[in-house]
Length: 181
Image (cartoon, rainbow, N blue to C red; front, side):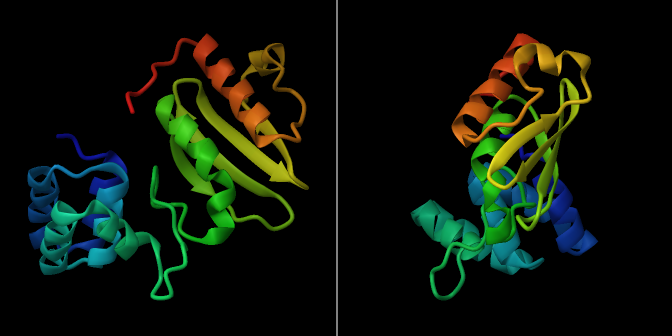
C-alpha cells in the first residue's frame, strides 16, 4: 500500500523524528490511505500512541476516524481531508468537489485561499500549474497554457458543475492519466 506524499510530509512535520517512520509503517500495516489516513494523522496530533488508537478505531469503523479528523466536538464538519490537508476550514470547502476531480486527473492541490472577495486554489500536475478562482459565484481557470482558450476555458462559468466538466475535458484532451478511485 502506498501512502500519499502529502500524508508522509505531514507525518514528518507533526511527529518527532524518532516516531515518523513508525507512524508511516503503522498506516501501511493498517491498510488505510487517503481521507481516513489524513484524518488519523491530523487527529493523532503528533502522538504515535494516539495514531495506534485511531488505527484500532478505523479498523472497527473508518467513519469514526473521519469524525475524529474532520468534525468538532459539536459534530460540525469543519475540515475536508478527502484529497488534501489544505481544506482545513469551512471557508475552503468551496474547492472540495473540484479538488476531488483534479486529484482523479493526477493534480495535487498546493494552495487554497478561503472564500472572501475572491478565492483561489492552485493545482500542480501534468499540464503544469493551474489556478482556479471563484468570485461572485463565478468560476475561472488560469492555466498559463495558451491552448486553454481553445477548450472554452477562457471565460467564466456560473455553474461549478459546468466548470468542472470543462476543466476535466481540457485535462483529458491533454492525455493526462486518470488515477483510479
